[in-house]
Image (tube, rainbow, N blue to C red):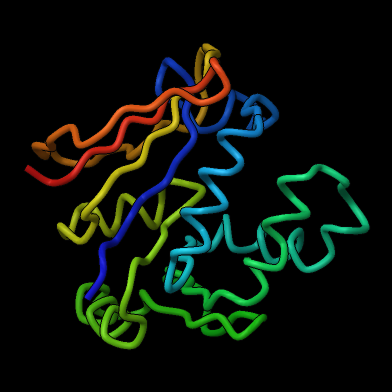
Length: 186
């Protein structure tokens, strides 16, 4: 069974979105893009909460008609071929062959997901699914990319989560701007 990896982009003051929901501040330079693509390529499945799923499933299937950013064009085929899991209490089904979990006992349902998709499960995007999984002790690795911006408010990383001890596994700088802080459970 692989690791559950939570990958998140955050501001220096700990927000994943600005006060008005803006996510226009992360810069995907060449080094950060290459690292992110490598992380995605190694994933057995992508895991999203409902809100992020709705955004991802509307963007990535048609990204070539929306964006010409090299990162987007490199990630799109990976997104299309990688299995997807949606953690939601409200969705019964999802498009693009995604498996929906969370309508019942999330710990039990996610154990079944881990058996079905051996390898790393990459939780990305928002905080809902990551917070729910972390509260159950199911997140093995936290990959926090800190960007050089202060947002002054917005959506916090892992809101309301009880205290957990972590150990620093790696730090790395990308493009002279952003810093990876990789933590494992202590």
